[in-house]
Image (cartoon, rainbow, N blue to C red; front, side, top):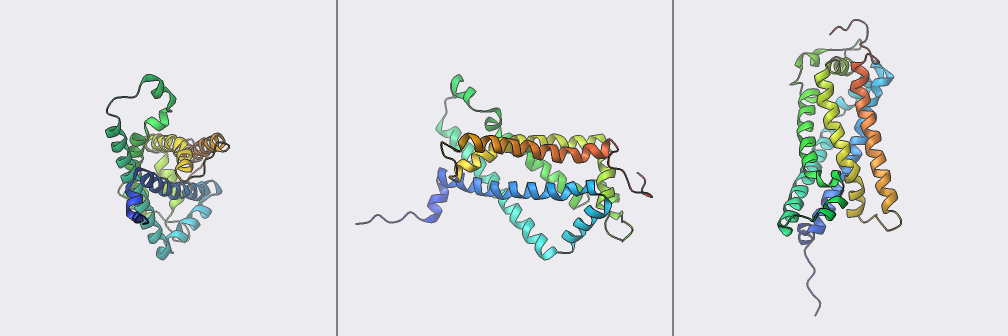
Length: 236
């Protein structure tokens, strides 16, 4: 007699299934981080470019909100599966690793759960700042010459304050520190790693993570240092 097939939910409740779900949700989030960076870097093209981009998003709510809901679902799935896997790993190894095993694991891999929690807190702060306007709500009323919400000026005015720069750059550093290991781990869990590609994918993932950090960090630093300036008529 043939054995009964394991239900699909059974696969995803196993450690291998949870790793797959965490990797798949992580891949979706990495895609968003890259796309978000590409949009934000338009600040270097000037006020018109990034305000036009922001207006496009705002005027297509039928696309924007499903995308937001999908990303929140992916974030929730990523957090839940990562916490479950961490707890399972600790339960399976009540005795700490020997020193030689500890040294083999990178600092990024050993601190994934902590950097992940910090990133989650940063996402909440970022949404309160630039989406729901709970931080500096007065900037939500700034408009450009075409009557659009002046995202360009809001970003410059915000990042001219050093503490806001720090509040962004430090969490983004830990985000990219998280991704420097997470991207290669994602390839492993999704089955793309082989003996031939493992090292190259790990190197590629780390390089991509730190390139993203440079891109994200450049935005607040350029505003703080006056490289990106306020448009005429807008004052702090």
